[in-house]
Length: 447
Image 1: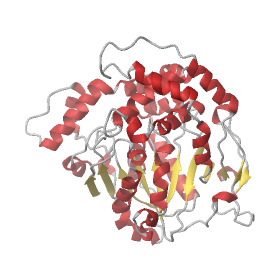
Image 2 (image 1 turned 45 degrees about the vertical axis):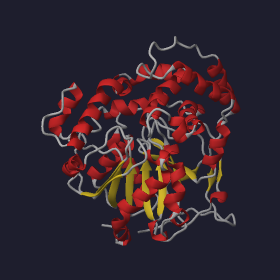
Image 3 (image 1 turned 30 degrees about the vertical axis):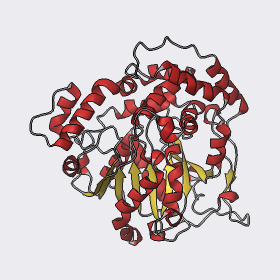
Image 4 (image 1 turned 90 degrees about the horizontal axis):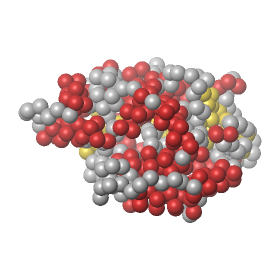
């Protein structure tokens, strides 16, 4: 495996930028003594250059956000005593009040700027990413892909356990080099202005990115959109991809999809784990999937309200964040109010509510169906961790059928849909176990 030379975070020099105001980048990578180091984050081709990146949101944008929050026009209180009609008024008002008065975006901005961040142009869009190299030799390169309503922020607390396992109970030989890109249309990546930026195109861009960083061998991980993109990457079988890990796998057998979507009773004779997964998914599509249907069919229409009202954006995102954490119903206890608002603020300040919704329109597929995701075409090893608070708990029997190259399967007792965000150390531990057998392949010559 070819490894790029080490760089120091403190040697970065980059211009401030704000996506909503237009992108601009400057600066260079340097060594500790200030000598320019153009390998690997500088390329001989200007079109392939990897440029340092810093975040700075203008004060005027933060003031405008708080003014909009204070001017929120609220609907009537729900007519039920639970969240069956959606986010309860009192709960959202508390969140929005804190966002408008006490929340400080600059704290997460500083946390991001303490990390080595970069941007590079791939297939006509600017892809922004975090790239943290381990201090341990022979670290395995790993690309992590977020989903919606998540973001690269999901993985921040997992960077330490992944890159420096000895500080978190692991071994030096378990280390990863970590690459965390923002999907085009999300975060600080640019917003595509043309059709076609679905999972397959993003997956191709990820392979370009990893090779542009001079990684001849690497592994990939994802949940939510990241799972779909990682599946697509594995189907494409690019040179150097050793394997993938998923925490929201597409395992539903083809013959069960219609019944699940139609709300039919589970077929007789299903084992208990399969029956439970069937019923969970049937309830999800019947009662909780309207957000996805709106983005799949009318992302532009949805985008107007989410782009104009920060309280509306918060309600739309917070509902899913609080439903999908584990245990469900109280995301603040799991993630903390500040980290939830970090994520929602990222979508607001980058003006990506509409562009991120279009990824659903581009995908327009059943993300849980093995046939829709063509999982049997995957030839590289596939690892799956089932977290108890996931949208559905994939049974091992379905996983073995969906992924013929399944190499690792484990059910854990903590964590939900946002596995790395909720349980960063457990998440890192699972990746160490899942990818351990592939490490010796990373040092072999590329095909």
